[in-house]
Figure 1: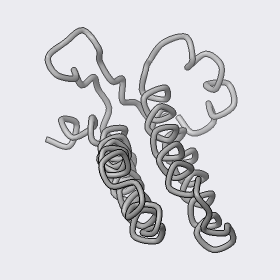
Figure 2: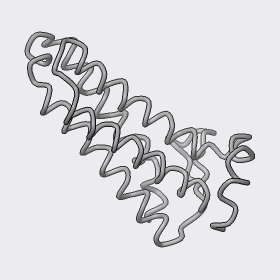
Figure 3: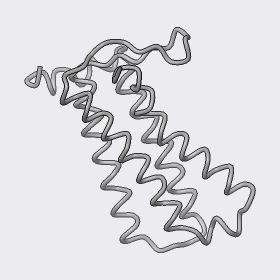
Length: 144
């Protein structure tokens, strides 16, 4: 059951970022003034992704999840979940620090959109199950 929700881990920040992008393109002046709600919306989507990833890690769930019935699959195993948790936590800290310290200028909304898309791509990269695992597996092999 939880393995079928794996696509939400990279999907939630991407969907939130694309939704804010559509709103930014449609209502540019208004969206540039709504910097705090935009940033909180993307932060909440990242928090939900972290919660799903933590649940999978805590329950020690592993396996493969096909996305949209295609050949693209997410490989969920303990090292990938540990990597996604750590990277998601780093992105969460960057976003929270940005809300607290950055000035609200014209590129602020685009900055949060790009952080959301980048976090989503890093999540996809961590669950890719490809050659990337050979780079970070020796670093976290003690957690297996």
